[in-house]
Each structure stands twice: as structure tokens, then as C-alpha cells.
Length: 113
Length: 113
Image (cartoon, rainbow over all chains, first blue to last red; front, side):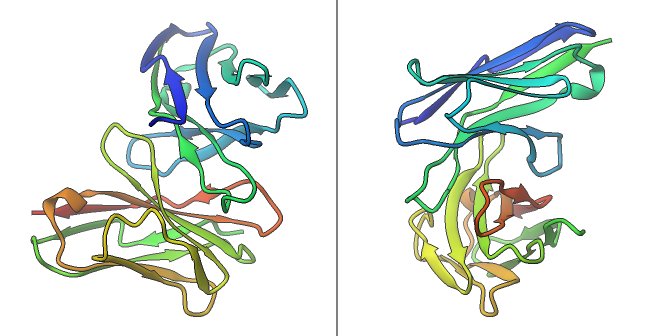
């Protein structure tokens, strides 16, 4: 049973375009929703995260949109750059479960120059 | 300050051998996690330490896997009688006790031949 479903599996965007990656979760007790960026051969790096008390969070070119009623959250990368080419993972966790992260399957993003 | 470090970065071993993987968390991070990431997948939770004790080992796949954190800092993941199916990247993450963010090390790529 996959508790966090991520789409699309892969994404190709032109430089300067907007990259959008979506995640849906099942457990309504989840209360922390991070996005991680992973380059080949590296560990996941925390990119941006949101808690359910807000519907949107922006940090530079990266924005998380959160829809609690739909149990969905998305990552928007504005003005995408070739250096953004990486695999992106959404994840979720909750208090009372030791904050262990439950992960999506990842989205491979390629930004063409 | 320094991030999470993991050693070795790569480990090749023969089937049936014993291996130890080391994680040095960020100073002051009492929470420590081990995850396993197979090719093309998101990380999967293995074990969680709060201080010296394993508070949640529900993700360990079988009794060949064991982890310790004797002084509440460095942790070692131990795998006995390795199998080819154990081949993966083993990731360590640490978290400040009152925080949500988990910070990952670069991982150890284990290959069992």
C-alpha cells in the first residue's frame, strides 16, 4: 500500500519554464510535507517543506501548494534551470510515529537548455 | 557546521559476508534514522534512534540487520550474512529533537556480489 503517490514519474521542461510535481497522501494524520532534491550519487537534500496550517509556502523559485481537503500537495519550480535537473521526492510524516518519512517514488526532472 | 557523514561511501562485499556501515549525525541531533534506497525508488525506513536506544526498528527487513548507537551520536548499521538483495544505498538522516527537518548524509552504496 503506497501511502504517498507522486506524479509524474518523469518530466521534461524547457529552461525558463515551470516544473510542477504532484503528490497525494492517504493518511489524514500526516502533518509535515517536505520535498527533497536528489542528484545522482548524492543523498536527498531538503528543498522546502510545509505544514497543514498554511496553503502555500514560497522559497525563492520553489513553491509548495497544499490542499488539505484533497489530501494533495505540489511542488512548483519557477524559471526552471538546467541545474535543477535531478530527482525530486515528496514525503510525509506525523507525530506519534517517530517522524519516519513515508516517500513517494520520485520524479526525474530534466530541464533542457 | 558539518552535515551528516557516512562511511564508507562504497562497499563491495561477497555474499555471506558481514558489513558495517557508519553514520555520524549533525552535532546536537538526538534523532537518527536509517533508510534504504533501491535503484529508482524512494528511500524506505529501516530504524529510528532517539538518543542511544532504538525507538522503532519496524523497518528492518529481517534479523540479519541490526543497528547500534551506543553513545547517542555515531550509529553503525550491521548486516550479517549479506545477500545480493541487500544491494542498495543506505542513507542516514538526523533531526534536531524538537524539529521536523531530517538532514541526510551522502549514503553508502552497498554492492553484494
